[in-house]
Length: 396
Image 1 (tube, rainbow, N blue to C red):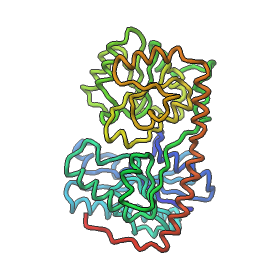
Image 2 (cartoon, rainbow, N blue to C red; image 1 turned 180 degrees about the vertical axis):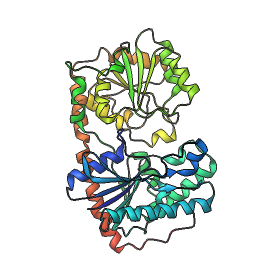
Image 3 (cartoon, rainbow, N blue to C red; image 1 turned 90 degrees about the vertical axis):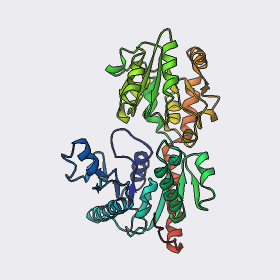
């Protein structure tokens, strides 16, 4: 079962849904080969930033520990803001992926598309099936009207042309029901064993966490203003009389926003932390928090951190966002500063049987079970592809 996996992010130490799916499929199919297509090497952007060096170098490599996976990044010479330039970049991408696929000997691969913008890839790779995997409502992201309109068109085209469409949340399932009759809800999952050491008492915490004043309210994941309620986090820190807040993950904050948070004296921003080390940082937490905004965008999410927090067993406090509010027996919901601080005090004195109950719930949502569901969809996709006469690609 060969696979071309076109991703919305590069393969790196910070694991997201795409890495878990690819790694799970290689374990399930030892003879499978996967070409993981990361973000294009953006020549025009690097020129503007004065960082062109290395951009044109070869970008195809293997992944340590996963010999079946080859990572490659196509080249992008021109800005996508002009339709003609975008189509030129797309043609380069199709050619690059086709050559990379042939170089590692892929045979009639399944084409797994994560970004809506990759709709142009359909029909270009001698694929045996096409999967469209939707992880977020990208139409609700903060962006220009022009980009939003293009996103809507590309997403609709992708839903129409893919053999099967997968979504990770109930909200996305509801949004896509009128766009395809081949829709599957497969949420994110967790490797529970990876988080077993969160509760260990005899292990050290990372050096960066040793100076954190307890109690520690800890967050793991991307720190982005479209997700994290920065004002709420700042207000909580300023009202805390003791303790600290640790934001563990890649930061996409502006310098002024980051400075505001650090100025409280209680907030620590670690930057990206490899997946292998996340349990060690969580061991330093007293409470796991999810101070997300409640918006159309966050409503579309199925946060991986929900399952990881449950697997870690520690108390959880979250704003009432999708996913977290579905587990009131395991998650404390808070709607403002005072509510967060009140719930923190309750969480610090919770019943000792709570951690085991959370870990038990996490065990029901393993990545292995998600891969089972994905394999079923892959089988259906191949069958549909053989008989499906997909409409031609619109001019978008």
